[in-house]
Structure formats: structure tokens, C-alpha cells
Image (tube, rainbow, N blue to C red; front, side):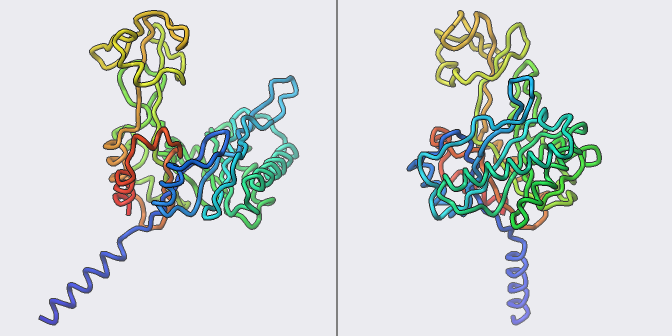
Length: 339
């Protein structure tokens, strides 16, 4: 009998050790920060301690000078709650990294840091503990991007420096390289061919995800946080050619049979020219969403392949319109699948 209790105790201890620590929070990806009751409620229920806030994009100006400039920087109508640490996120367009000299890269790092510090103060914060850089770098821009990260580290010596990581960068580590940062944030979305005509989900597809992930998750040489999607969009095709993502067409529009004809393959055809929606007659649309079951499937797969280290889980993104599609207990279930 004594041995039975000892065995049970060992099993309980082992189970406790195997449980992964997951800290859930959100990206904030809007151009104006305003306090919102529903958004704050989700942060509170998750006991979130951080909020990852997009500060700006950095892209080339439209003049002949082609200088890097802030694009659509955030403004703060309200202060970020005192219970949350603000983690600034800066997106760098690939064109910014091309044909940059070393002095120009150093100057860019200094300007980014100065801008981030000013915005952090506007948010009601004295400083930040982590700076995250978002960039879909390629083999041709990798060296300049990594140099920028090294320069950002020099002017943010007491900060954690992180970089986003796309799936192709996870898989092709030799070609893409390993960014010189403290940790990475794996973006587990936008994993299909958005521009391909037909019925698919380019936001989230487990079969597609498996092509990139698997053993690459455990052997990646940096600590890794995870981001999962909560968004949807409508992709528009004309003569079976991709013409863009529509910000005007919503799901309620597509299911209006007077406006759209649902095809057998699940796509939607515009019955008439609809100027208010930017559509011509016979344009074909594909609605893609972050289906809860698909998110759970990806979470289960991640749980089986990630190492047992603690990590931050970010949902993209914090918006009350999106949150209405997901009950808190549903998102908590995803958290539990990863623990």
C-alpha cells in the first residue's frame, strides 16, 4: 500500500513538471489606442501582464529621396492601463533595408528608438521592457536586417529585443538565418497562398502549417513566443486574378443573395457592379476566417512539438469587433491546450 502512494506521488510530481507555463495576451494593431470595456475585460480575465502595441510601420517616403519614414503611427487617446506593460512593436518594410549603408542603418536604429520612447511616454508609461521588430526579411535583406537589430540592441542595452518569425523563416533556417535577438515570436497565420484562385483558407490551415513546423519548432535555437489569429478577411479576384483584400465587404454582405451568388465551390460572385464596395460585375470573392476549431487544431499540434519552456501566447489582435466572435472560455480552452 505504501508503494502505491509513493507511485501516485511520483506521477503527480511528473505531471506538474510537464505542464507548460503559458502567458496569454494580445497584439494591439490599430492606429488609435482607446480604452474599451470588452477589450479590457478579456485582458483582465486572462490576467495579462503585457500588451504588444504596434507603434508604427517604417517604409520609404514617396519622394525621390527614398528616406525611411514613420507610416500610420499610433496615437493614444487614453493611457494604457497601469496593470499592463506596453511592449512596442515596429514593422519594417523590406524596401527600407535595401541599399542601406552602415551609417544609415545606425541612424535608423537611433530614430526608431527615439520615436518608440516618445510614443511610450504618450501611452502613460515611463519605459518599456521589450522592443519587438516585425519584418518579413528575405535572403537579400537578411544581412541589413540583422545589422539593424544589432544596432537596436546597442541603443536598447537594458531591454529584451525580439523579432517576429514567419513560417518560411522557421523552416529555411540556413537560408533565412537566425536573427541576433533574445527571442522570436512565431506568427502562426498567413500560411497559404493568398493570391491563388479557388476555395482555401490562407489564414490558417493545419496541413499547410505542418509543412513548415514539426521538428523545426523544437530545434530552433531561440526562445519562442507564439501568435495565433482571430481575424478574417475577404479576398477579391477579377478574371481569376488576385486584385486585393477588401476592407469594405463583410460576411453579412456576402450572404445577401441579392448582392452575391454563392458558387458550388464556396466562393461568391458579385451579381452586379457595386461601386460602394469597389466591385465589378462577376468579381469573385473568398471569405477567410480564423475558425475556432482550426485554431484549436493548430494549438494541439504546437503543444505536441514545442519544448516545455514558458512562453507568451498572443492573439492577433485585440479588437472588440473580433472578440465578439470568440467567447472567453473558448480562448481559454486554446490556452489550456498549449499548457
